[in-house]
Image (tube, rainbow over all chains, first blue to last red):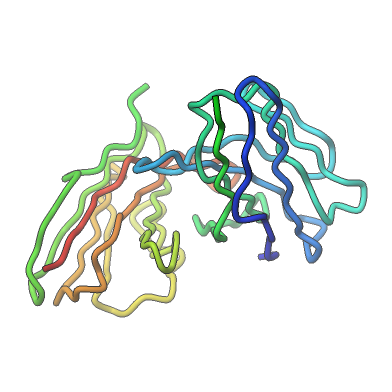
Length: 112
Length: 112
């Protein structure tokens, strides 16, 4: 599985967009980019995933660069409840056998 | 729908004892994975079960074991507990390879 690099921490003002970057320069052609987040003392929560096209759901948008070496998770209107550790993970979509490789993630602090 | 249920939520054990943690996946989910989370090492994959068979195992000593029952419920066991086993143990379930993982809230194990 490809390794990811994320900034250790970021701040965002409440109501503004939070843009969380992730580098995955060694990603393979069959690997997807997944984002999970972990709010303090809870289990990680799935947010979104994508292969090469930009994706959007009710929680966030995922922008993947054309060369697929980096991506950005966008929370369009951050709230205080979005304060969490955000993990960017790359993995193949099939044959996963349950293994998610978590890095250190980005701690996002949303401030009033 | 009911989420992933882990019991107990908190546990205190003495060094040398053994412990069994339980995980009930979302109804219909056949894959159950276990993770250990510590401040120093972050989230680390322990093992994964699918249809009662262990499909993948992380880099943990043999003191860590698990099993899955025919109803997909899973247990993990840690024998001869060490202080370093103090951690949050998380369980995640999914339908299968192509699907995303839903995590439980975890069991906080403290070894004294």
